[in-house]
Length: 116
Image (cartoon, rainbow, N blue to C red; front, side, top):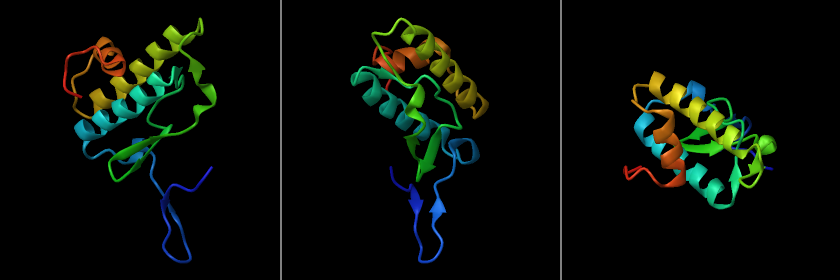
């Protein structure tokens, strides 16, 4: 475990939650999907992914709170992936993107054919 943020002498500044700092939603979405794909390729699903469980350090989102993660072979995995996709879709649509839950799932799985 380590500190995520900047550390000027005397008073470290924690990286903000994504919910409080998402000024470039297209870039951040692309980077979020990249991180989730890495997790998915490791055969894991976050399971509680939302704007409260991501930090934004220079438009490079960092996934946190992986305590709910589960193997993709788990019986609960499809439901957890759906929940993660719904949360991402809701948050990024509020930021102006036009996503569907299925597009987010396809982006995570690398099946969408869209450039993400």
